[in-house]
Image 1 (cartoon, rainbow, N blue to C red):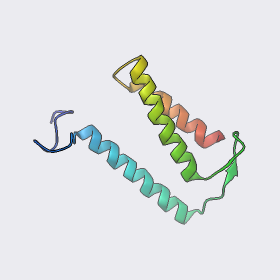
Image 2 (image 1 turned 90 degrees about the vertical axis):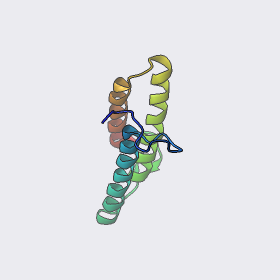
Image 3 (image 1 turned 135 degrees about the vertical axis):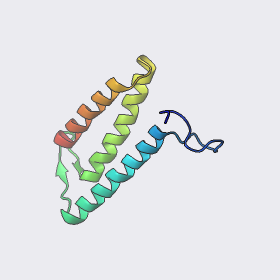
Length: 99
């Protein structure tokens, strides 16, 4: 299987394997966070920014920030996004630790 070949030939959207994997991963993260919220109720905590955030808030901040990191990486360095992935993972760790 080619990595960037459309999954559905002639489809209305470019559903490639990486796009499908991204949306599958995002859905899996949302399911895991929902299960965590039910199993271990969230308690807001005050971070370095001085505002109270929950796990879901920190996830949203991480996803939004990661999108901007990838766009900035594409503007300055272009593809591949391996370096941006490393920066996003460091950003994720810092947000969940200190925000």
